[in-house]
Image (cartoon, rainbow, N blue to C red; front, top):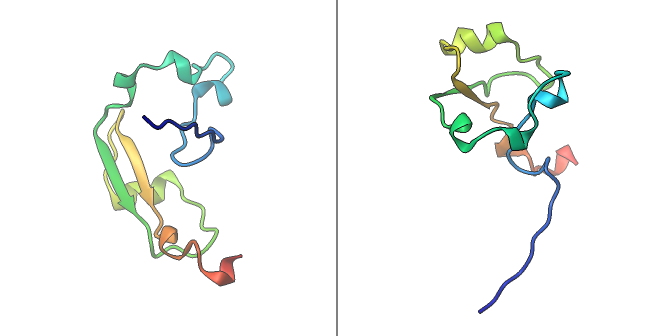
Length: 88
């Protein structure tokens, strides 16, 4: 049997923004259930955007109709060049 321990910051990998970060009475992550995160999802691809382009609701809705309660994944395309030497 082999076991190991891995530790990392909560802001590593996929990030969840809890309501408590921005709302006075917002929920903390431990107050959500797993079912709160099982939702229809819209994947919005925006690879043609220039660096530092502000991604607004209007820009997102122009690409994909959004519905209340849906989750949104934004693919900017920047992951493909993340490790290029000129970005260091």
